[in-house]
Amino acid sequence: MTAKERNSKSKVRRGPLHAMVAKKIAELGLSNVVEFAAYAGLSDTVMYDMLNGRVVKGVAIMPKWQSITKLAAALGKPTHEIMYLFDPEAPGADLVLGVQQVPVYVAGCVGAGPERLIDSDDMVYVEKAFADNRDLIAFHVCGDSMAGGKRPIYDGDIVIVDRNVEPEINSPVVARLVDDGYVVKRLRPGGILDSANQEYSDPATALIPPSRVARMVGRVVRIHSNIAVV
Image (cartoon, rainbow, N blue to C red; front, side, top):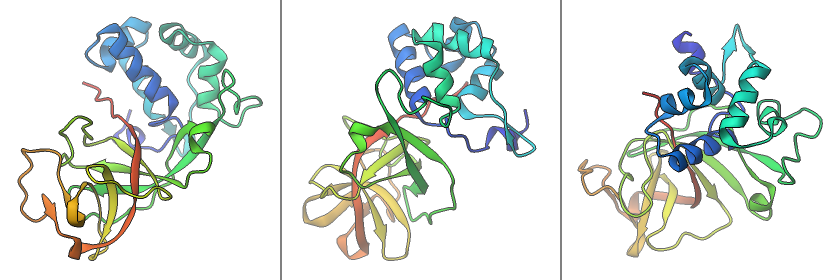
């Protein structure tokens, strides 16, 4: 698989399948996706493709049904539920065990420092009941300034932000800076934004005064954790 193919966008990427695998890895006490692939009877490459998507010459390639069946068995899920994650437009795909999934647009990257948003056609999926009456938007996280505290946010994670929810003190937020950069930080008293990672020491971005904040995008209401393939 080429680097270009590995970096291709996919509707499954960071969505429900990603969360299911992460949860199962934790339940089984495994260290990473490679160990889970072995547990499921799948090759590392097939497992990687199923999580991150595979695109050949601009065409998304569906996994083989045998691979989907093995993955479903490893996750303890019905095969059709897993299949619908790869083909969200298939008949019945909007009802997965009675839980309807809806897409949230991933606008681009937010960083430890000023990062301009990049064009993106990525989506992350959440339950409809969670999305109802919310104004949701998502961002890839670039950098480790928030990799600390009780609920760390790591490089490669996706944060889902509700633009209808007022930020609260000590809560993670996404903010747009005066210089048009976007950051994910922790809101502190006085409108100061700081980093949850105590080891993060960049003086330009570890602490951001309110004078540098153009507007608050919203509060982080969910984190889709990254799974590192090693």
